[in-house]
Length: 309
Image: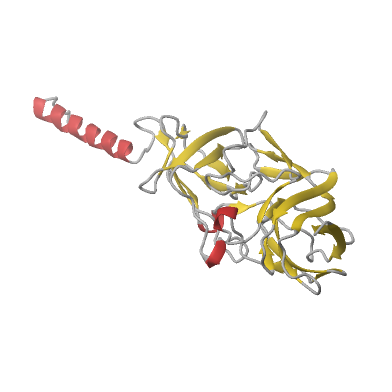
């Protein structure tokens, strides 16, 4: 049988050209990197689980202007700012997917006053500064779990099970009047003694490492002529507690001491504990800690103005 030889007429050439172009267009359409690197898109929220919510039972949320730090594969960091419209933008420096390989992401958030040195934040909870603008305690650091994705799904989703959550522990004190104490105007100071106050936070791995330095967290109180003072929460390093938490309270020039029962499991990351302490002229009476909603000091409706000693 004699083979048929294709005649390269203009019509045949055009048909082949169109076929090849269609194939190339289809391949391009299925290749997200065909036109170059693809920028990551970010969505983020704060965990709304029982132990990590804001005051009054309302979930905590980011507000416009907040900056989160997104770390790719534990090395390079990118800052994303929440816009008024609810989207996150890295401006001219977003993360770009360079290939089709999967990438692991984590993110962290902290008060802007915390500036890392060599990718490390040194924490010393003896200081309890609160940012007057946004109400965040300087040591209240939030972190996400690892989120893995690739260029085929370029949105980094830090919500739901992958939302931000607190990595420090929060402790609050409510002081009440007891026998022989008419009001708490003379309440001037309280001190939590002999606990671990130092830790380091690695801004590349997003890991917190508890230190070994023990010390006191001393707070001054401007009490009011009331029978109860709700103190602004303090942030503590997560830690196991051997024995008791020792508390000293100064009221009307006299110092009272008591031993508090630590929470079961110690001071755990992401948990907020409240101790109610009754002050009488013979001493202090305190119950066990209760687990409460996590909130920032700007949301707090306490009557006592508490600052670092």
